[in-house]
Image (spheres, rainbow, N blue to C red):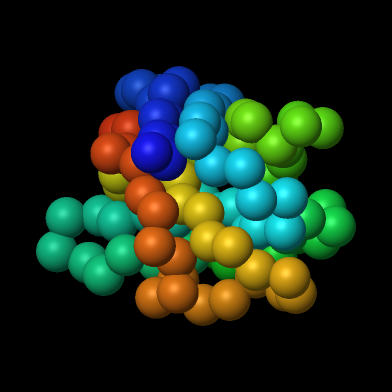
Length: 123
């Protein structure tokens, strides 16, 4: 059974940093895409960053240059380093996974999701 468990959320002031992690278990496919997504109250869930099996990363325009997605060599942990946080980054952050042999697909294709970790940025 596949489990994705996020950690590292919290409350910070604008300009601060947080590091999120996602522990992956029960998922043995080498060819996969992992991603971070977020959802603020009243808003739709949106893609933040994704990384495929080849290490190719993709970022939302709003976080490019501030966030970095990475994974460990055995793909059991996914990370999101968030710097220069702004109040607009406040949301519940989710990690997700999908089996794929190519580039990362759209968010709707991801079948496996964690429960989320809350990030709150105050001004």
